[in-house]
Image 1 (tube, rainbow, N blue to C red):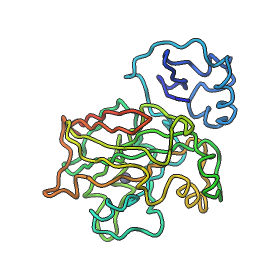
Image 2: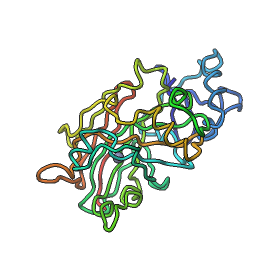
Image 3: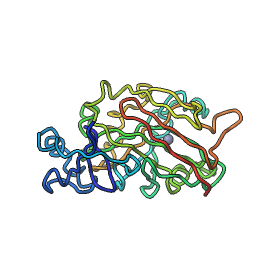
Image 4: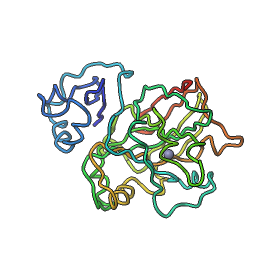
Amino acid sequence: MRFGNLDGRAVLITDGGAIDVHTASDGRFGPSPAECYEQWADLRAWAGTAAASGAAAAFDPARLGAPSPNPRQSIGIGLNYAKHAAEGGIPVPEWPTTFTKFPSCLGGPNDPVALPSAGVDWEVELVVVIGVTAHKVGRADGWAHVAGLTIGQDLSERKVQMRPPVPQFNLGKSFPGFGPTGPWLVTPDELANPDDLALSCTVNGETMQDSRTSDLIFSVPVLIEELSGIITLLPGDVIFTGTPEGVGMARKPPRFLAPGDEIVSTIEGIGSMTTRLVAG
Ligand code: ZN
């Protein structure tokens, strides 16, 4: 199932277009995406019935918003690919390095992002949206708590992030617009192997990152186990699972984003998202 946010309303996305969930379900689900995550198992069951297969309408993809636009918790994982840890000169971590992308930084797949400085970097990431409340969930049940997967950019202002005496990941990664996600959510059953997806990003057409999620140090189900072992994950929460090697900060010389740049982030089985940077 492909699930999206069209002008703030939950839709199923099919080959024939978008189906408004609230209208097609006679008001049982939605109208907002957040309301759908609260009833995710029931929505999935309904989506498989004939009632959910009609009334698809063509739509302009420019109207799509973030699949989970206002989660209660928005979590980032750092250093989750061995080669990315190495390019930062940091040993492979024993536990997931966890930070907050404050929800006010989240944006949709078509939102331009204003650059607050000349030190902003790209980070393509697989983003998980939670579909079932999770607390103390083991890895064997991890995927069962995931609504689906989408594409994200964990945009990062490196000067603030690295301010001494200890790194300020939360603030450096939470400027307005620094968490674009989209273009839609894909449920894990749609993917041949949700633990092994190619992901890449280009800046102005030049490939900067190119890896696979099978290289994650802490896989999606392990992240669910580790995070839910401490906090309670709630329906609609988003987890940015970490970025592979190839960020601008680690290049020689370092390279950062400038107004007019365009990032294209791509994940196998999900699609692509284009992020335009503008002057702040
Ligand atoms: Zn990141």
